[in-house]
Image (cartoon, rainbow, N blue to C red; front, side, top):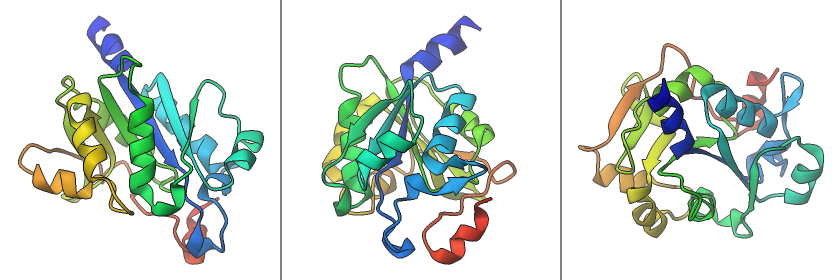
Length: 202
């Protein structure tokens, strides 16, 4: 019990919520509604329920509106002025914000995947084994989110995260070391990217 509690203190939840929703007519994904809450609030709730005590939220598009409309109390809010460059810039900003916090790993999740709930997040958290951790949820064997990055990997990820690829290249180069955690039985990894995808929101 003590070990589990200590481990949770070492892992920070890192929510990437900066996207501008270009294919959604410029509506920031963080401000979409799902089950009576803004999508960013829902995503933070998922991380908290799964056991993340420290949560950093990277904001970008209409950051001021997100700050004023969303209840993100208890979270560290990180502004990414380069959000239009893609997810890579948000990942860099988020990992940079964890420097000096004592976190030894980051559990990275995306604001536009409401089909991934606490069960899947908790499974990936369970793959933590120190600052060398490298694990990812998988869906029928295909790598997806959330992803767990030990602190030993942060500098390498930041150096290669560009455009919308995020950590894809870094993980591909280390496929043999990446632990896949199957989550297809408890989550659906769809993205809210287009108008058609809004049917997933309730």
